[in-house]
Image 1: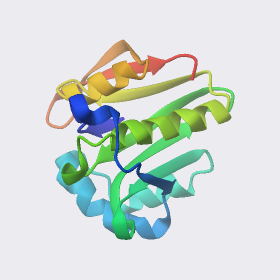
Image 2 (image 1 turned 60 degrees about the vertical axis):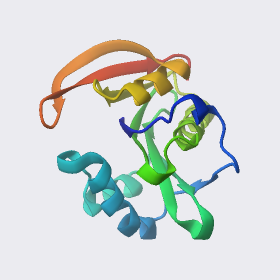
Image 3 (image 1 turned 90 degrees about the vertical axis):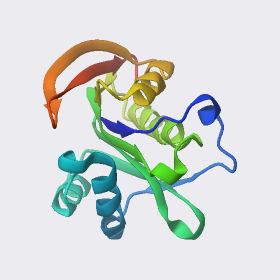
Image 4 (image 1 turned 30 degrees about the vertical axis):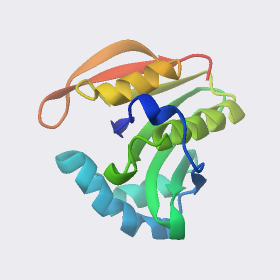
Length: 164
């Protein structure tokens, strides 16, 4: 999963709790600029988001702020009695450090449990210490490394959580 910003010491609590809801196609216009800001050359296009939303085995959630503004988003693929994959998890820079990433990850893990997933897998940038810490605290273990997976030539740490 591509992940930006896990927070820090205060990331365990969110006050008030974020409003999590399903990602809708009309959210894509708001996601694309945020995606570019967070992921640069690796950012997904609007077409990629639409393709993900159209896939039958996907579950995407957004954390919405006051007025419905998207503060973060996350997606899960597969997992119906098999392995699930975290496709992405991102939090807007202004909203980082408030537990939104943890809340979004929790929603994906709940979805994986509902699908009876055997495990949840993800990839995360090796240089993203906050995300690595978040995933480790949620029970994910390192199982591999993908060399030069992210532009420009940044390794990806492959992680797995079992059972989902």
